[in-house]
Image: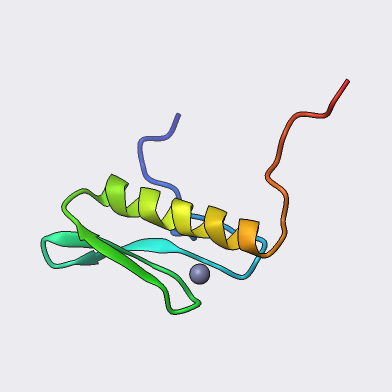
Length: 73
Ligand SMILES: [Zn+2]
């Protein structure tokens, strides 16, 4: 495994046009989305990323995109 980080990419790719990412905001991290949504300031970048993921999931649910689930047998 290479030690260097992968190239920059959207943190939370979405099929609904919502590209929520966690951005540094001083000592805090804030989740932001291309739709204009912005999450609360978090001390942890992981928290901000979780906010971004939650926003994308909610946006997809509202857009009528069913969540991925294993095929029924
Ligand atoms: Zn959005």
